[in-house]
Amino acid sequence: MKSAYIIACIDIVEYSTTDEIKQVHRFKSLQREINHILYDEIIHDNCILIPTGDGMIIGIKEIEPVTYVKSIELMIRIYEWAEREKTELRGSLHTGSVNVLKDINKRENIIGNTINNAARLLGGASRNSIIVSKDYRDNYLRNEDETIPYTFTICDEDTISDKHGFKHCVYSVIFSDRESGKGYGSDEKIVNKYKTNIYSTDYPKKENLEKSFIEKVKKSNDIKLVGIYHPNTPRILEELEIKTSGNVDISIYYASDSLKDKISEFFNSDKGNLSFSNKTKSVKEIKNWYNSQPHRDNIKLNLYEYNEFLSFGASSLNIDNPGKGFIHISNYLQGVVPDKTPYIEMEWLTESKPPLYKFYSDYLYKTLFHKELKIIDMCK
Image (cartoon, rainbow, N blue to C red; front, side):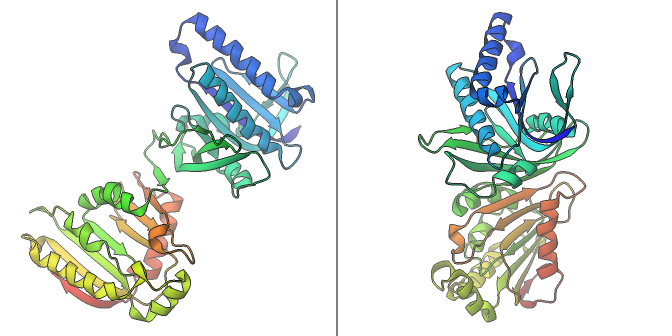
């Protein structure tokens, strides 16, 4: 018989490296704690527990729309237990249909791909992390519900491949108790052993520019910078270390003056970083940078204007080269000036592009890179 369940997987980190006395103590303690947390669900036959030796697979039957709240409570309280026990955990949450049947011990058990996938998600979890599947996130973590006693923060997104080559879109989350404000989970990057990486971050733009993005720009041969007028572009270029060998192709795309009113209306602002008076200054500074380079023959620099309003700004590096692709996206929000919005960063390390990377790169090509644009200047 098939039923809808939320599947929680708990794994004790480095369980097998401890002596057997500690193993027995921790396992008994973990079972008691889970039994205590889920007592009502267990006595009403709405919960199935499967010990795994170094952890537990827990199926919570979805009997009402707010069943997921119990899965969040489970994670928070079991991680509280781990703190008391000075133990580290890895946890995952998934949801879907499972087969419920009697096992060899004449007890109800659950089997199916939903169980297998929930266990595979643990492969992306670092110490103390909580990983949730795309299905779990889409069903329960789209919008925060202020009526429940818990909050969540999504810290990282990735597409991981398991040992069988199956791909899983996963999110690393921190669940917090609304009353105490204390959070459980980890903001460490999702563990990715199989060379495909998509990740997002809510670091401030300035911090992002000064760290990962600049470093990737330095190592790139094909650079495309897209934005309203790029106030930071001259500073980014100053960070480049153009070498005597190899060529660097730099394309910079500015919003045309014809978009000024539309942009100001969209962001509800015409001041600060949205002032088009900075565009002329930026172009002049970029030309000065180019003329100051001792190896100008290695640099191809093109400045363009676009006339089609973009829903976001983006910068791409080596966009078509397998193994090097990287895209740096400003998620502009209506009424919010660009320097107050987060970035999304993505790169791919395999021959095939991950879906999210492909979506953004295809969008840029459709709207910009393959269109006839007004040329501001060309330097070669």
